[in-house]
Amino acid sequence: MRGKNVLGMIFANVDDGRVSELTGVRSMASVPFAGGYRLVDFVLSDMVNAGIGKVGVITGNNYQSLMDHIGAGKPWDLARKSDGLLLLPPFNASAVANYNAGEVGALHNVLNFLARSSEDYVLLSACSHVAGFDLSSLFAFHEAEGADITVVSAKGKAPAFENQPIVEACDGARITKLRLGNHGEGEETYLVKVALMKKALLERLVKEAFSKGEYSMEKTFLLQNVDRLKVCAWQAPGYCASIDSTESYYRANFALLHYSNFESLFPADRPVYTKIYDDMPAVYGIGCDVKHSLVADGCIIDGEVENSILFRGCRVEKGAVVKNSILMPGCFVGGDATMNYVIADKSVSVRPRKNLSGADTFPLYIGKGIQI
Image 1 (cartoon, rainbow, N blue to C red):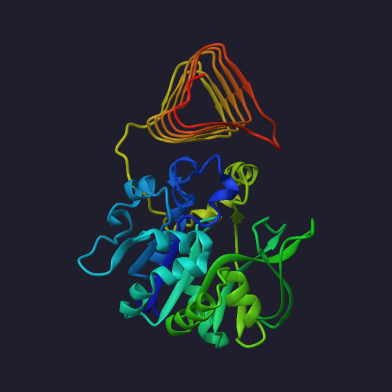
Image 2 (image 1 turned 30 degrees about the horizontal axis):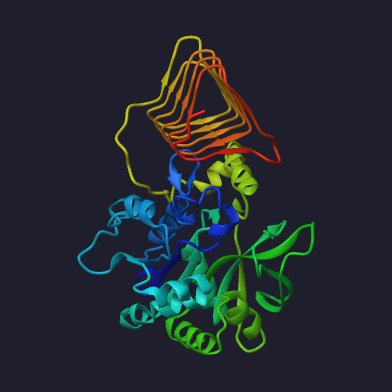
């Protein structure tokens, strides 16, 4: 199977409610991550690196930020006269209701798009995970196993998504027993929201489920078909994090301060592409102190930064202390201010001598554009 015979389909808004603070002004797909990226960048880059040349991004609401970021798809070489990157918003009130009902409703909205596509296979993916998948290996695995549906699996504490699939038994690569819902605290084999199948099978499953008023992809595509279809699990190698809460978003970012995770997410042979902003390099003032942090271009640091992630254009004045925090683009921290365990959204301004502190298990979130 070659990538050009696979249609990529991305759900931009799935699981927005799990991180409602971050998605109040944007979709899950456009949530900033790792100092200079958006969550959609990792999914799109994996698809492009595997040779996929046509990607549909299914959106439901709040997608202005996403449109601004992905544009026509030029950073991913998807700005083409035919195929390439296509944004698929709901076209009327009924379509909005379908999208909000679940993934099946969202796919039913774009059945005409699927029918017009010439690719034989479809790769479905949400943006609620962060990983660097070698999708070419996934395609080869799907063919070698003769699978009807191949899903990506990972090991660890399962995320708290509604209808989270947990693998309970396998016969080789084939899943023979599956349950929905996370009820354990220990390590389990759980499924990431990535699935590959033939386009004809997807169209049939969507039509059948929609006609019955069933909208959960996990229930209709997987749980109800685990005995009837050959559903195989491809074990995701390397770093893989699911974003199911603001705390998990915080931890997933800071996991990248460990080099092994960073190297796994940004392999040299599979680059992660994003919208490029031409900016000056970061400026480190005389007497500043920066330790164990990711600092993007355009930052000016005269104070102290430790164990933190700073996006482009942040300013930390002399005497300010930023620890264990995430500063999104354009944040300003005044002199002698202190920030510890804080997530500051875009363009947050903290006046001099303010003291803001959260906790490791409950980081303090400051909304976009707020001045304190």
